[in-house]
Length: 338
Length: 186
Image 1: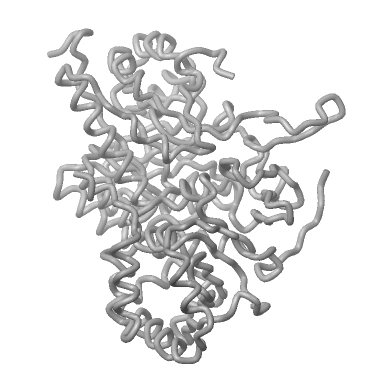
Image 2: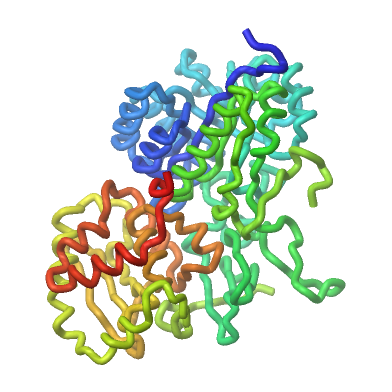
């Protein structure tokens, strides 16, 4: 039994976009891996990524042999008349022994609860459930066992929510951080006609182009839009609208209208998160390489172990992986983070 | 303001002037005058061997097995044109001055590109830091990256083993110039 001064050691939940990345995460010390099938049912439906049912089954076997859980993200929104795809993905998870499914859509949640009542159900960040009332509803209606909180809450708010809900909390600690309206962003849809929330892909690579200009700068284009232009010696970020720079009549110089290219890194807040009652620490990055997975997972493994043992953690080596060369604690420390 | 774009990789302005210094410029200078025709059969053999030994490479490419890629290693005196079609694979060397039709162009210094090929470096981070550059069909480039990243073992080692008379210079370049890997620091 542990008290506030020595919180329970949290689970380290790590990303995998390929079987090789999954094995890398397992070997680097993950407690659980989250991943998705190669279709529109998961919110990282990027070209060339993700798992077939067969490769997922093999990967689960690899993880289970090493006492690591595998969570299947079925966390895009099922739209008529395509709902069978989401049901099929849940069926795959049940058939091959995934340890939980992560869902956002209430229809998918209902399908899991009704057809597989023994299957562990996690609520995706894509559901955008950020109040105790909303989270309790999912718990009561569908038996949700864990909520992945949106990245809009301070640690103090997470702690308050923890005291008011009957399920576990999973919180992001590292990786890409985008628009603060998770599961509701339609910017990609506006620019490309493809929905982040329903097709599972933000800024699809098929709609992205980088063009080197004669002056050495590079423009990033999404569909018909220029979303940024980088000078020759300037760090870049992902080609998403929310991290682009724009001009308008009142601001003729390009500026970040929504977000800046920056990476979430809560390494210095890990003890606070653990004391706040967070059960699982989530690393973002299913679209990243196995090199990223190895570096980040092993760093956070050491940090969690150090904190749990009362040692000072060292997570200084991750800046090189950061988007735009910058890191942030986002809203977790203060709502005035921009 | 919305603007329609339609570009292909070969229209990209000339590569990376990169002067990265990762590989001694002398190698590029010394080899630049050499004819390319002796290299072509070696490259041909390498791509055929990879096709035979690494069939899993093609699964993640999807429709992009029919795409063509220009791989522009900054320190090399020529660029490589790759067609990862398991039924008709192609890898050939070309002068930079050639106007090559390709779907995607991937440019960068030797150490960065070879580490990405081997899963030893994070391509997104190298892209963020401007060490590597892609142009043309981004999806084709991303699929190739994911396909390589999902391979077990070292495809760079495979290629070196297959390189025949290029074995010695490639081995030299790899061992001397490759950045230390994460695991190497322990």
